[in-house]
Structure formats: structure tokens, C-alpha cells
Amino acid sequence: MRTKYISMTALTLVAGASLVALAGQPPRPASGSISGKITYTGTPPKMKAIDMSKEPSCVKQHPTPVTTENVVTGKNNSIQYAVIYISSGDQGSTAPTKALKFDQKGCQYIPHVLAMQVGQAFQIINDDPTSHNIHPLAKVNPEWNKSQPPGTPPLNAQYPKAEFIPVKCNVHPWMHGYFIVLNTSHYAVSDDDGEFSIKDLPPGKYTVTAWHEQFGTQSQDVTVAGADAKGTNFVFKAVPY
Image (cartoon, rainbow, N blue to C red; front, top):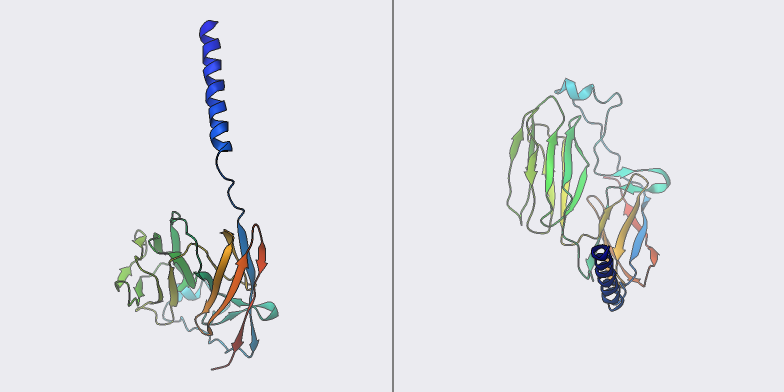
């Protein structure tokens, strides 16, 4: 009985000490977010139908022929695959931990635009019954060009420097996409409704930049206070080719 009593007392003392330590720590500032929508005005270029006849296995995966993805638009003039990120004022980003995936399926790159943080690991997967070739056209980072036959293991990669990198397939000329390598973990890619959200931002002043492969870049200054949920929209002027 005495041993049990001493253990409970020790436990109480430890718990009390922990509470005192926590009480002495300043409260964590509330984190805010920046969210909004990417849209266009004007007339966007018409995307071209892709001829995949040289790869019948890929044709079978697309009952409806697919088009190029330089400009992917949706309802209410929304734009998909824009990258929105904190370009100035970032007060510290979390280290990348989650490995990302870049798929080759139906002779397309999925997603068309893959955003990542410097040093973040990602895997390139071939889900097609045909060989593919992955060729990122890096200029700041090392350029490489690798073949990936069907059924082979994923290719593992990461980039040590920030860069916007076009990606192509030397086997299938219609396949192209982008690796967007950023110094910040505070970024988002607009979805098929053109919407985005950047979370976990401490209070502060930020420059938010939206990039699109066809329409260029725009930036806005935004101040986040406390647990603010800031609404920030970007409107690009679309012009046909």
C-alpha cells in the first residue's frame, strides 16, 4: 500500500510540474488562412484535341478524347492548375514530410501541375501498359531524363532549389506538365472550381502570388491578423492564341 501511495504522489508532482511549465509558456498565436478563387475575363484559347492513335492502350482509357491542358477552365470562368503561394513575408515554413506522387496514366501527367517544397520527396509512377519517358527541363536544378517501362518501380526524386520546371515526355510529344518547386510550404493549386486555400499562416504581412502557365503571374499584398480567413481573388485576362 505504501509503494502505491508513493507512486501516486510522484505522479501528482510530475503532473503539477508539467502544468507549471506549460503555464509559463506564451500562448501560440492563432493561425489564419488566405483563400479565394482564380478566374478569367475575355476569351480563353481553345484547347486542341490530342491524337493518341499511336498508343491504342491509352485511347481505350479515354472514351471521350482529351485535350491539351495549357488552360483548363470551368464554370463561372474558373481556372484550374494555377499555383498560389506566399512569395514574400513567410515567417517560417514547416519542413516537407509527405512524399508526393506524379502519375502517368492514359498517356497524361496527373496532376498536370505538381507543386512542392524545396527538398520534398516525390515519386513518379507509370500506371500505363506502355513505356514512358520523364524529362524535366530544369535550368537551376540538375536536368535529367529517365525512361520508365510498364511495371517498373516508381522513380524517386526531389529538388534542392526553387524553380518552375516544364516537364515533357520524349516518347509522347503531347504529354507535358510542370514541377513547381517553392521555398515555402504555404502554397496551393487551384481546383476544378478555381478555388484555393493557404492555411496555417501566423499573423503578418504577406505577398501572395498566383502563377499560371499561360496567363503569367499576379501578386497581392495581404495582412493576416489572428485567426483571419482572408478572401483574395485573382482575375487573369484571357486572350486566344
